[in-house]
Length: 369
Image 1 (cartoon, helix red, strand yellow):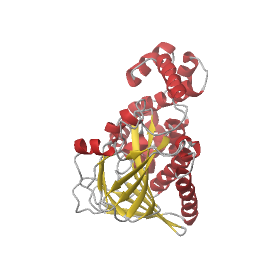
Image 2 (image 1 turned 120 degrees about the vertical axis):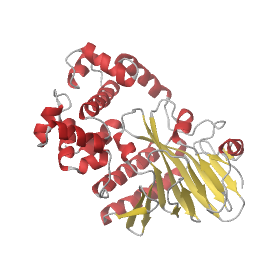
Image 3 (image 1 turned 180 degrees about the horizontal axis):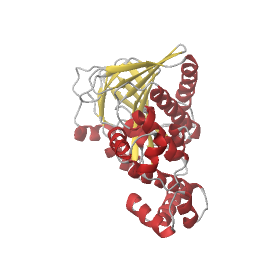
Image 4 (image 1 turned 90 degrees about the vertical axis):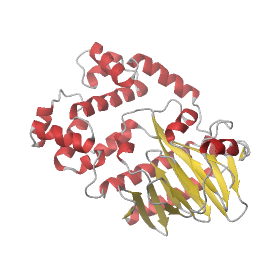
């Protein structure tokens, strides 16, 4: 069982590009935390990552407080898996505006383009330009071990058939990882198509644009997991641990089984107490809590994508009765499964296309320098 592929399949990250920006030097902008943007951009989602693609023009900087700033150039992608507030700027010496002040500044700079195109923002002092595509990935599930285990920022640099991934760590130093040539070539081609699609005449409703960014994100995550630095903790580190990785594979391969900590420990060759301690240290919760969370994600997928009844879904995800499943689902999700299913269908009926947020409620906060 490939646990990462299983998680990507079930958790279902959805991508959207919300505007393009033409920054002209000197400029400095603040992008707020995803939790502040989520009610505007994707109110029905429960987690959100942000990304910026430098399409062309002059290099710029992306900075998260307490982390080493990242210099990005044309062809680079910056992903913020945890949606941290960050600064984008032409010069690190510039002082960015406050968020409250910048809210008033952006609305007047965000302009509608021709029908079907993404809104475009022109911002800055009128000097050398940097063209950026801004977007986000979101999911409708609080249980998301993937995003929570990723570093605060990941920068993918693609140049002439080579790709390098830099990421923030526990220190102020950036870590670097070279990707295999075949992955670099794929990323370079996909990035080129993504930029072309974002600048095309039908970008505002482009399912292709969304899918391309989702695929790039998934590939970057996969490569990052394969070369996870030593000493890391979190769900990704658990995948690399011989015994905890075995436990995760067992849970994902047969989530409906009546697992206990003792049974999982025996299958993985580790004592019950040692498993509980090690699993909590790496993954951040107990094996049984993780199992319960994963079962709910599988149930959400079945509720969304199939016409199966609640009782049938309950059995498929490991509950002996519909009543027990209803109680667990309400406790972990906040509403009964039938109500969640009806609400999800209504949400997707309203969201008939992927487009920009309302103009009056800008997603990125900035102000002229």
